[in-house]
Image 1 (cartoon, rainbow, N blue to C red):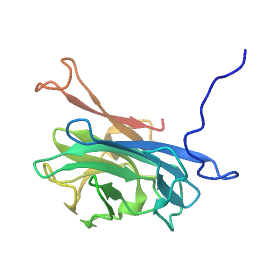
Image 2: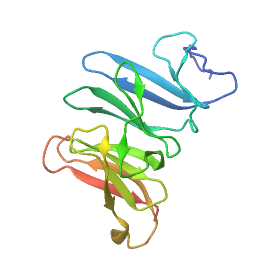
Image 3: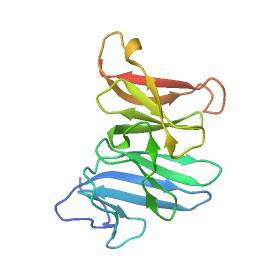
Image 4: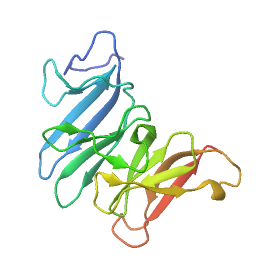
Length: 175
């Protein structure tokens, strides 16, 4: 069997796209970004894309959409570059204090907070409720990892679709 496809955008002939990320604004507004090489490209419309962000170290990003009272954001991290936020019109590097955001390998939303997993450690970090920047607070999990290892990921587990008090934070170790 053959595959049917239609080319949309050509980021590069030789550099693979390692991440596709979508920003979903309120209503029907959305954007799609592709990370390849050292850049992030806006691939929302068909054609040859231009780089939205350049000078990056890694193109393998983890991402979430996060909405607070001010806006909707695409929040991305990769463990090599500082955390980046997209607000519907531009990219920024948020000021996160208390931790080094370039060590964050994963981002998760839980209970109206952004949570980050720190590379090669047993720490998760979280921001204040509804915050996209500011002081990060450490959440040390090493004492509950009875088999050792390091923190690999965080998820939210729910029994009712994510709107009740029974939503749980899940932390996954390498062991």
